Length: 117
Image (cartoon, rainbow, N blue to C red):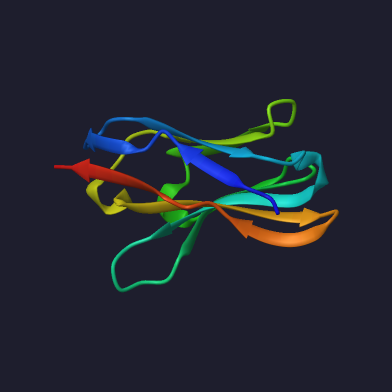
């Protein structure tokens, strides 16, 4: 069973920055993608940013040019650098990983990010 542990969330003022970290209990070289998703009350989890095994990235339109996803495969960690935060970025952020060996999709427990006005 793979564990994903998020950290780095919290309360920040509008315009501020946070960096989320997701540490995997298995080597992330065995993933084909790892991403961050955001959930707000009454809504499903929406994709925020994804990084593929080849380093390619994809972002939600609402966070382009403000958020950056990156990975450190030595530390088995994926980061989400969030700059110029807005109140609408508030939500619970979940790390998600698609492992290829053994094959499986895993979620972290989620971490709260709150952006105040």
